[in-house]
Image 1 (spheres, rainbow, N blue to C red):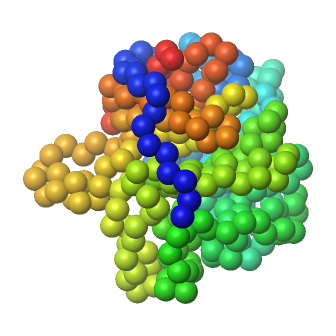
Image 2 (cartoon, one colour):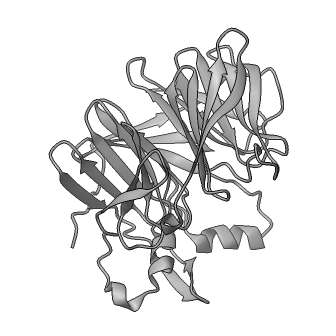
Length: 327
């Protein structure tokens, strides 16, 4: 059995402040990251471009890129992204199995693709990534390990860890187990902390890459629950986390906590569809629960400015989807 966290010593309610946009081009903003005077938003359902760059904090639109299509320089999907610097951005296209680097020209804010890395077939399908030094961390969706280390040529050179299920793995199809344990990840190069949070269930993993320790914490809802149907894992428990950010001091997560039965029941009753999580859970770098924030709306992705005490988030349910919370 793994240790389980319970209540948070600090609980607060937060009310959002809307950041108005000068455009209505966003369809389903899933992620947001801020780098100095730039805000980058990933819009997974946009019909034209997956990524949108804005001036911050004015939130005036600069340029959109990552065109949706099937030509060689188009993207088939957008699954994750990361700033490398103020003028360089990495993006992940799971359908093409490519990690792409884009360069921003500061003079006129033009964005161009400058590098593409084809991921090796051992990975099968990459749904998230982070960059560590010159390499990439990609969760293992075959469940042979917990994550792969991939070099700048797209080749796997190391497999690390295992899925921390308390059940007998031989009872399951391993790809279905990996699918159920799909996780969002983040890494902080200042403290060498790599964090995983499960999309289903309530499990957080903390890898300290400096001292090679691994902490697994189960929440009250436990590990992802699912049933096998035609080789696929069908979720039967709860929607868990939808984002994680490791800062210099803490680990911030977005938590949903709604059961699939509850979601189905509301759909059957014709209730308005609400998507996202209403909670931000904060943990120490060693996994102790620190604070639970209850929000006045449902959100997906976050960007945390620890120094200023501001969390910027995306609300896919609103026509004004960019909001901030003061913590």
